[in-house]
Image (cartoon, one colour):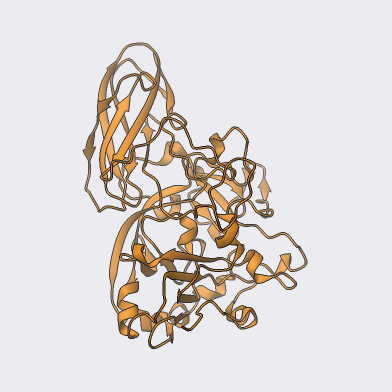
Length: 408
């Protein structure tokens, strides 16, 4: 059986374009999404941290800039719409993004596809001739909610804003595989390799963005070139991104340069140890569960200012089932002692999208602890407490995301 994981790092490095990490060539630490290494700091201005140049088009009033590679949407700016505007979508780059030169001639961007009967190097122009489809999905960082963990795990201290609901458009991976003669024998995983530049003198496996996901979960996977109906921005992985609906953000590899169908998971550190679910104080290892599927989750987004007048109040928010369809949503105004079913509003855009919910309540003056609790069609419900873990991953605690509402 052919071992599809034997990739030549020198050859792979030659594929990478852009100079996004040139300044870090002599630095042994390179930022990774879960806090391994150090993120480049954001530039400071008189009004605080500034958006980095590659994401300078974002809505600055709506965003919290943690670093040059970590930008969060404020809870007060989720709004009531189903889709997250692109200029309000969070940013998390595992490495500094490549040079903007790679989006100047998008059609020329090429993806090498291996582990199929007829391996090929496909340009974006080629991919556009192979099929067209869209998926609406929640894109969420594995560390969303990390800021609530008391042991303060390393990495960005996200609250709710490292998530959004967006539409990706591209070609279905299954259509690409079919066009290339089907999978080679022994394939168990789909492995995407990102196109970020690897600094000189650094072992590529320690910093490269290369993620493997089980073939059983890629039925709806895409090679995407559009986000919310527009060309995929550099900040979000353009020209082409590997999209695995229902999987956490790191598995949706940006600037994808290689799509390999492999017998084993990637040997890269980001696969083998960085994104593993372990007890507090225990480092990640290949024996620990990998960060793949998004868990069921919800949170209140309105009232945004957490202070309202007595009388009729609209308690609204978003809920999603993770990898599975959302089924139900409840809201509590007494810290979880009692729950009332909320109602959905707006369209249902599929199993991977979130849904908007609202509960109308009459509230007297006082202080209330407001929470929401979702359940998916597998019977998986949001827990009251977070599941403590070393890296602060997959926090879907309804208590952590509850709000104190003051009614005057």
